[in-house]
Image 1 (cartoon, rainbow, N blue to C red):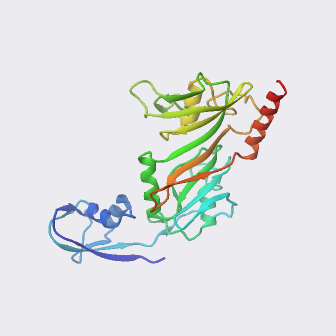
Image 2: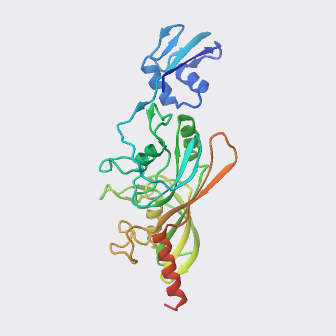
Image 3: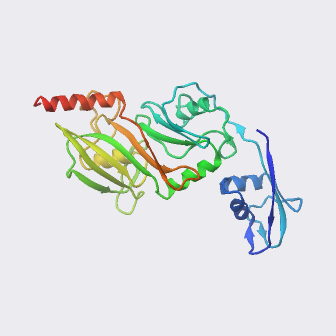
Length: 312
């Protein structure tokens, strides 16, 4: 893919910052990307290079901007099979399996969803000047379910705005130990990083942490366990796990926020991103994507249902 140069005319009124004006002219590009391009000397005003992002446009001028070709990331595409729920030119929606990390990080330089997405679609238009898929939300390594990935900058910005404005509906299934204090409820409690264990999150004291809201509804009581449908109104790290633990019903199999010895024979916590409702790029109607409960979790539900039916 080659670099592309465009020319636009600033009319002269009203006066405006260069980066802001170019962002309105190229809505498929983020403001940070526009600013980076300006600082790299790829913007000319009347044939003169301008590298100040806040340069004030106060008269009619011709502006030339060059978008460089996306540069390859130092990531090897991996031929990992993906459970694809939906795909078009802008997005890829997958059912992420438990055990797969969403994004490369320290200790996870391979085997991630990003590596698999690159293997599935090796010639991406790219995000932020890089040939990479756009991750707009994540699931914990051991949480399965629906994840949407952007294939280009326009789609990435479109999806990201919805997540930031909380115009996305995310629904999870969680099996918890014991029964919540009420069959349905709303948990409103700020979350911050645990001061004693930086790998964990915790309920924050009043006046600290980030506002966090979780809504739950009991679908079924299965002996000493409850199957819940959970909706997130905010998207904090480990939010569902922390919130449900705080009301005395930790997620079954969660050895971090629940019991150190799982109450059921599980290799991971019982949390599954069941449904995602979001507007696809250029569409004002909500689209709904769902992922069935994976076999290991469905087997637990079947076992508990059988126990209950047999009077245990």
